[in-house]
Structures are given as C-alpha cells and as structure tokens.
Amino acid sequence: MDNPNWGTITEAAEHFGLTRQRIYQMIQKDMLGECRKVKMMGAPATGEIWLIKKPFRRWDSGFKIVAS
View 1 (cartoon, rainbow, N blue to C red):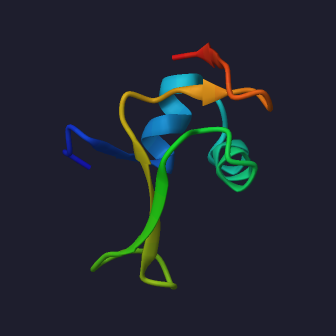
View 2: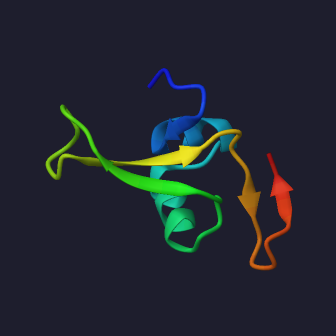
C-alpha cells in the first residue's frame, strides 16, 4: 500500500521483522498505537483490512515506546 500515513499488517511485520500473526496479536493488545479496520475493495474474504498509523511504533503495557 502506498500511503505515507498508514501501513498494512504486512508492512508492519516487515518493518519489525515479525510475523503478520504477531502483528495482529499486538493490534488486539493495543500495542501498536492507532489502528483502524477499514473496508477495501480487493481485500481478503471479509473485505476489511487493518491499517496501522505510521511511523510504526511498538508500545509495552505501560505505553512506553520500546522500538520504532
């Protein structure tokens, strides 16, 4: 996806060197900051994808940046 403000799960996984599954878990635990689930044409079966606000950042449970 070519958007300067938002990235996909795949882009975040490549950025952090993690799996897409781990990025999804981090979204569920609110560890990646602002994330949105949006409808998108051509998306997988549900027609929705997760977008993660750029720049990509990880937060621990105390909301402190641990990596960017």
